[in-house]
Image (spheres, rainbow, N blue to C red):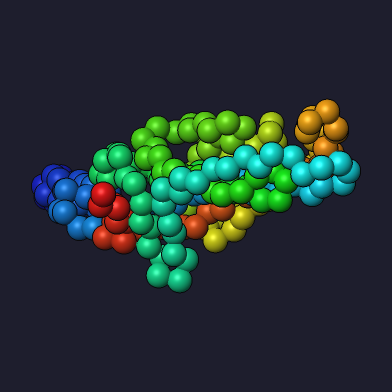
Length: 187
């Protein structure tokens, strides 16, 4: 009699377990949104103003209050999507002006973008990553910033223009966004 119960319970458990871990029931899914953003600012310390580099092509907007992501989405949002990565840069001061950004759908881990590499995503959304050869952990709603500075010398009509360029690279784990709150811009 015990074997018959086991034969009945085991398939039932497997069936229920597959419903819990699979999204074939068409319920909305949630996707982790991780951002790597760099703010570059230049301060003139000597000489004439250097020519300004202009960038201007931000292609997404994340609203933290509404937890919505809007942008150019040229990837499939499906159950194979591991997370969404937003990356970009803003320039100010003698470094230039404007912002540029973009979204990437990540389907395989590890994922590498420049000196940033995601190694693992925990079930609770915590990411484990390498940045500039150091390993970090970042829970949902946490961020980590790395600041670097250097002197930049540019020739402006035969005169040296010297600026201090400060670059702040911030990795942010914005947590999970519901599928219905990920909206593609229409052109």
